[in-house]
Length: 92
Image 1 (cartoon, rainbow, N blue to C red):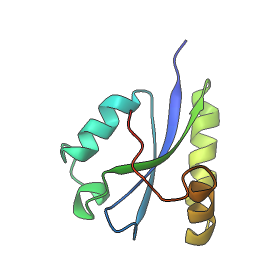
Image 2: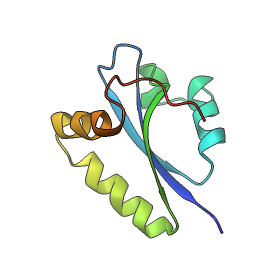
Image 3: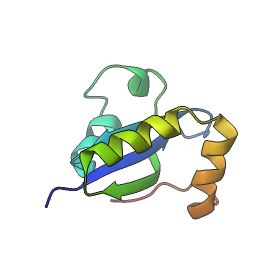
C-alpha cells in the first residue's frame, strides 16, 4: 500500500516554513537538500525536515496540506513544537 507524507521544512534559523506532500519522503528530502528542484525551498534554503504526517489516501494528504498552508505561522510553529520542541532535524 502506498503512503503519502505531509511534511514541514525550515531553514537553519527556523525563520521560514514550507509544507509539502510526497509519496516518497526519502527522495523528496534528498531533492530539497541538494536543491535539485528550483523554487521556494532552494531560494530560502529550506532543507531541514522538522515535522511529518503519514496518510494512506492521497486525498487526505492533500486536504491536510491545504489546511496547514492556511494556518498562521504561530499555529504551524506550535504544531511542530508539539512533537519536536527544539525544531531538531528529523532523520529519515
